[in-house]
Amino acid sequence: MKEFIKSSIDQTPIEDNVFKIVSLANEDIAKIGKENVINGTIGALYDEQGQLVALDSVFDTYNHIENNQKAKYAASFRGNDNFRQQVLKWVSQGSELNLASSVIATPGGSGAVSSTIINTLDAHETLILPSIAWGSYKLMAGIENINVTTYEMFDGDHFNLNNFKEVCQKVMDQQGKVVVVINDPCHNPTGYSMSHDEWQEVIAIANELSSKGPFVILNDIAYIDYSYQLEKSRTYMNYFNDISDNVMVVVAFSCSKTLTSYGLRCGAAVVLAKQKESVRQMEIVLEKHARANWSNIPNAAMENFVRVTTQHLDSFLKEKNKYVQLLKERSSIFTQEADACGLQYYPYKEGFFVTLKIEDNQLLSQFHETLMDHHIYTVKVNKGIRVGICSLSVANCKGLAKKMKDILDQCQN
Image (cartoon, rainbow, N blue to C red; front, side):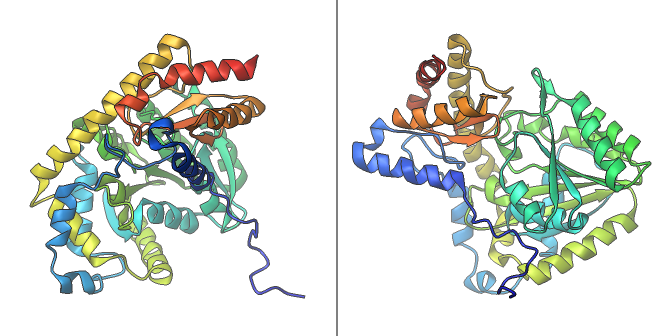
């Protein structure tokens, strides 16, 4: 007998480990007090008092948007024209893109990622992900019965170009198309940012393999505006100008992350290619996807992004920079102390997270559980433990690496 839902869908219940561990951390805080718990689970920016950062320059601007502007629909399913134009300027600032382009408004960066995956791959084709990655990529693929394979992210302290090419070559040979996710800069969860040389080689690999079929690079830049070298954070995009006619780049941008407005879902897919026809083809399917799935995104969210990044740009950058410097201070404390005590972590450059390197799955699970026994809450990811320095105070960062190393040594003995 048939069921109410379609037979091809994965019915495994969703288990979001992040929210589960957050709940456990909150229960512990309620029992023994906030000062006695290290909660490194949260993937959002918190201040030194443990409060979620909501930038005044962003929300004061939002509060001045007229009510009828907030109430009305967006101008189109693609998004408002002024928003789309401003997103392209914002995303590409500091680079000199010379490509055909289009922007489709989406509900957060997640909408840009998921709509790209769904509209570039058929069921049972394969999406390529980093071996250490945000778990929702796999979930997005699975809901449409898209398979997943991974490339090893690191070769020592560098991006693993050899394995990246090897995996992309294998998938291209199997299905005549490559769609690969590169979460850069400020990779979630390791905090790695690729060098210009690494990006140049990635483009060369894409061009070489594109002689056999379409090659799509899905560049997730969710955390780009918290780069420690903000003025240089987009310069790698100049290498996009070198793509062949059979390579496309879709940049997934998150206004939600940039503006610390996580619940006000707003983002965009920025489509880049050599040929206008290729961009137009993608634009059509992404617009239809938008109409069929979310219709249009909040008008006020788009208007707010435009006003903040134009009329109130100076105050926004000044306020945001305080938190970038705070992130830098927290990460420096943690990584320097980790180096001093021999606690291994994946190559960290910048961003919200540092990930400890634990490649043995049994040890990983034991370590994660034992940390919680010591009131230290983190997120278990593939081959590691994610520490959300974005939500830890400077005081909490001090001495944390040594505590974690001592606990790890206990697990290993």
